[in-house]
Amino acid sequence: MTSAVPLRATTARPAMRSATLADDAAAALVAVRERAPLVQCLTNEVTTNLVANALLAIGASPAMAAVPGEAEQLAAVAGGLLVNLGTPGPDQRACVEPTVTTALRAGVPWVLDPVAVGVLSVRTRLAEDLLAARPAVVRGNASEVRALAGLRSSGRGVDALDTVDAAYAAAVRVSRATGGAVAVSGPTDLVVAGDVAVRVEAGDPLLTSVTGAGCALGGLVAAFAAVTDPITAAVGASLALGIAAERARALARGPASFQVALLDELHLLRGEDLEAAGERLTVDSVAARPAGEAVEGAPAGGSTGRHVPGARS
Image 1 (cartoon, rainbow, N blue to C red):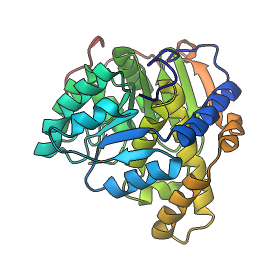
Image 2 (cartoon, rainbow, N blue to C red):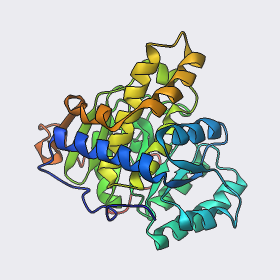
Image 3 (tube, rainbow, N blue to C red):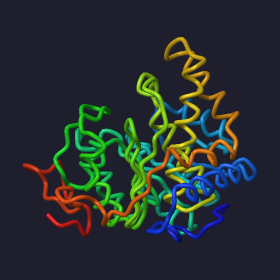
Image 4 (cartoon, helix red, strand yellow):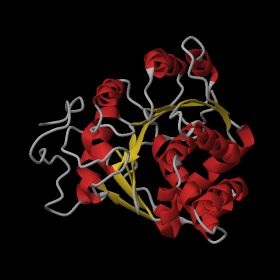
């Protein structure tokens, strides 16, 4: 395993400053490029190519095996594991539990990307079961994270109809249940871990026009998690993809050229680019949220599934 920091060792850092977090993210990017951690991916069949190429561009080594008996072998020697539920066919479902179990036994941090959870029943039940295995990071859109927390969500397939702010309480709830970080993707990303909440202002609307941009972000989180703690991994990956997207947009004529340029810009990204991004981060304490934004809010009119372990209904 290539992890430089014990899993969740620095998940909650209430005194964290944006500049310090940007420095940590920069150091993590440098470490990924130096160590080229193996990232085992049980991922969406539709987006496998983009996820693998994004990992290569950032400096990691992707493994996309989803064959029962082989997936767990790779997880045992990987630096990080991504479990993306975008296309949970029979082989992937057969792989998930033994692969996650193997990763946990080996001390390999794993990332859960609960694609379309709360909308479709098979993956929703699978994601709820996987939360008990305490992923280092959960990365999803606002509707998916709300559904994981047992709150009513407004997702439509893989698209979120809930805002990032509407998922704040849900992110806190899931983070407290897993002990890890929760990353909510949106126009401004939100990362919650313990009592710390971080807003990440980076990205471009064209990301929503490329199939698999969110899946690629999940892969990047797993690569960063191989070398650093969960909150730095989530923030660092969000910054990396967001900054690369902004630069790619300046070169693109549309979604196709944007995707090509995005991979190029990920490849060209350096630690100093993240180090200089401290002003893009807003760090505060979960306890400092204004009145009316309670982190333990009750479900608004129902639930899409079971509540996460330890969550109050």
